Length: 209
Ligand code: AMP
Image (cartoon, rainbow, N blue to C red; front, side, top):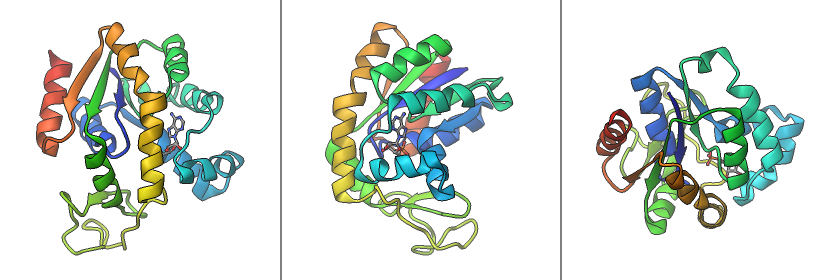
């Protein structure tokens, strides 16, 4: 099963991707996570991506396409994969089409104000990668990871200013993907304001139909 998840920042892509990879036994490919790793390691790619990511813009299509092309050839993708955060532009989608046949595209839709509110309340564990949200998925002890007791951090681009830019970038560059995949007849749209479990159920129902 080869899936693509689209949605504005904080629509719930990462949360749902983590559940879907378990359910279907497929690989999770988050281009945002891959870029954050490069930034943390201080590689050339990381240096190039750092300021673009912090401001809420998009890394170049050329770079992203090269990264994904290499990643989907790895062994863990043999059973399929879920692309979380790619494609983000029509150019990326067209190139992806040339690389592989995508089975379904899940679009998690939510209003801008909901996403901005969620985004600024997000917390991540820098050690084990667990994600929390002060609004609807809080850690048991405030600011501390439930799994490994590490102090939680906030993503640098989860501020109001960068968040607004990321939502604007989504509307300008990524929203056209909804039309692109609707025309191909492979888009499933779900309401991202529902509780997390209900969103997962709606996605699985759509994918298994
Ligand atoms: P994410 O974790 O998916 O929200 O991605 C974080 C940031 O990484 C984005 O705001 C972009 O700056 C960059 N990024 C991730 N995926 C892509 C992509 N497919 N194309 C361009 N930039 C990307």
